[in-house]
Amino acid sequence: MSASSQPVIEIQNLHKQYGEHQVNALKGINLSIQPGEFVALMGPSGCGKSTLLNILGTIDQPSQGQVLFHGAPIVGKSEKELTDFRRRELGFIFQFFNLLSTLTVQENVSLPLDLDDRLPEAERQKKVSAILDKVGMSHRADFFPSQLSGGEMQRVAIARALVHQPKVILADEPTGNLDTENGGAILELLKGLAGEGGPIILMATHSEEAAACAHRIVRMRDGQIRHE
Ligand code: ADP
Image (tube, rainbow, N blue to C red; front, side, top):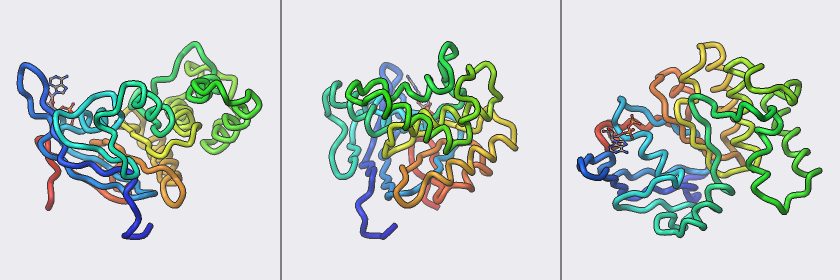
């Protein structure tokens, strides 16, 4: 990681106002995330963490400001361009795993690849096996989510977030529904992913312990980043 490398994500003066009630959820956020960085986003409930993740995830639009991805603007792209961007470059990890209960582990993990109909089946299977191996879940490939523990479900969800080799992982309280031991194992896994050649990880969390695993902690309050 060199100081002169171009940020993967550069957030410029981001504002978000919600509708009728004129809630100022974000009030001028500026943040750069360098290649390989694992950043924890902390702050009290209502400070704007989810709003920021939603805008970076392109599922919501800011009222003002810009987000650059490898120097290219995201805000203002068409819906189709945003869908392509989301499918190619982003991986999502949620507090409640969000696995599809009627699909097996390998079918769940394969989902982001199924959106790319140019990828041959053999190639798809190879990628799914490799990523299940990486998260230590190969032995559960044919299980359904209901047959897994919380920690195992989150491993599968991480595999699904990674299988298409995105440049950005957005994680919203990934350990919020896990006990200390399983949460710790998930954090170790995330820590191992970030770094040279890996995706950047932006993780919203309430837990100081979880945040301590990141390379950098960004603290928010009332729609702004706190600079101590
Ligand atoms: P956090 O994730 O840190 O708990 P949020 O980003 O969810 O915070 O919320 C930031 C602020 O924006 C809060 O005051 C919240 O009530 C408000 N907010 C979030 N979503 C909406 C919405 N869809 N409409 C109106 N206000 C919202």
